[in-house]
Length: 323
Image 1: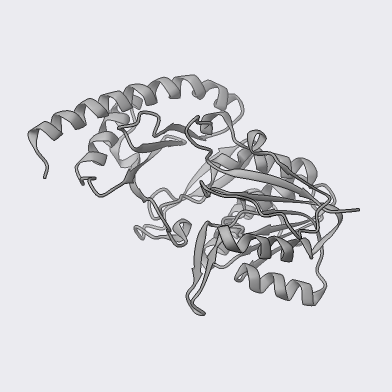
Image 2: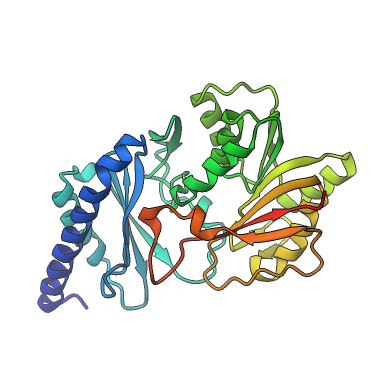
């Protein structure tokens, strides 16, 4: 029940949040402007009683609440108005969302609206289309911008596999880094179309850059039959997903050894696979993997705006195959 006492509490929390966000924005704004980075994190549950995450998207704000049973519908709009006022952002550029803890099937594809409206944002010398209106996730996981740069630096002359490719941002970086070919795989037709748009936006020719709408396991089986091989890959699966047509569930905790084994079977000797997850209780099972070296590189891949003492936004490993 929403009471006058709660209203006062919400206003106090909103002011605390606005002050923190404004301070963080001032800290990062000029630095990221020099790097031509238009998307960055301003807040992530940094004050225990304010269960929110705030991201800057080139003049837009995406503000989400980590909801729980006692959440009320009045709380998030109060936070949104205060943050918008602090950063002088018009309310039409404020996008409020809810994030629910637990198993969320395919959250990156969950549709909230049908505007189909995208805005262009910069990340270094590349540009990407994001949709802050229609989905829980916007189309760009900015916490992996360092990882994308690593891929670009390694991509020259390589055949690159982007599994669970989403909107193709890793593939764009690989192409810009001089990859001989890129293959982007995602089960979603929307994601494949989005990848094509991102490549066109960055003037990447279609030749040599293959887009595959398929379940990742189906693709891996078919690729092995066809004798396809790669020498650089990114594997960034959701924590949970379900292939509804076959009622097959993917759980990263128990299924990642099989997934990685199938990926490694397609890789050339001496090649590298970057494997990442945002699951907060993940333990990498390495037994039986055909790897010469497995190194966790999380501290290198998380940008400074995403670093938090209370959690890691993702974890990432670099897997090198035997020569």
